[in-house]
Length: 323
Image 1 (cartoon, rainbow, N blue to C red):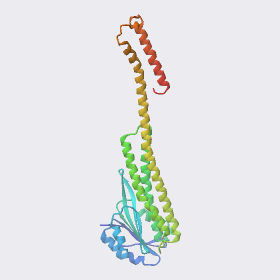
Image 2 (image 1 turned 30 degrees about the vertical axis):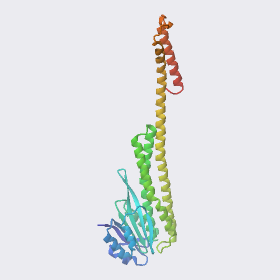
Image 3 (image 1 turned 180 degrees about the horizontal axis):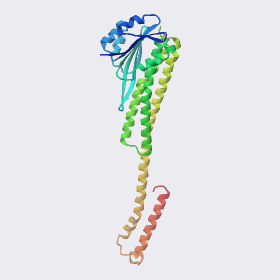
Image 4 (image 1 turned 120 degrees about the horizontal axis):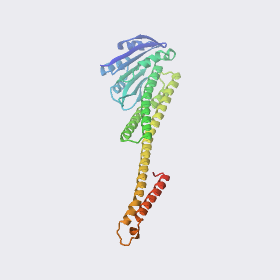
């Protein structure tokens, strides 16, 4: 069973009275008045009631009962049906809450199918701006779309902050497998956000072009404002996705550089140890004619030569940055 979040009549930029669903059609027919109804998770019977009340097209009702893959705008005569999605990120998991908007002469109806940010905030904003609310249904439609667009901002900012934190960890320490997995997950979330926000550009453009009795030409710049916000969102999402990809690449380069440094150190120490090993191997061949073996100071001379050779190699590798 659905829930009526709010249902009210507005005229001349002010709220007139709260109503029940059964009274909506009568108020919507009054000149200079429009009805704004907000529903949460309505069922088929409630949508059928709205259809009878406001003459909603049966195809719009069928669409409202289905799951969609992306936002869209459809026209049915002089009425609009819009599907929007609001992102919700809980415990690191990204979900999208679908909302259906029916708009026509004398009414605006929203049907939210999930627990996203309440549209009561939109109603409060509109009621606080009576001069704009006086425009009627078109201003409410703009406010709803603008609110949907705003919902993407905190989610994208949270993802951005997480990417920056991982980037700082990678630069300060090393690229761990968990970091790579998380960055890949964040990139997928950014792609999903872009998939749902991109169609809002098309919706905003169509609302600027469409000619409807309830859309004033003076309101078209407001829909262009929504388009601008959406375009900026898409640019930000693209930038964050690039940062996530570059963080992985930079991490791999840094890890390769660290491994190269370690390998150089191993190679330098191996070369230093190879010198006394070679000398010891030479004198360990046990040839009969080795004059140094019979020299009184031969042992100390060989040890000194080994010490000098190892020291020279160490200084050389140190200067070249290998140690």
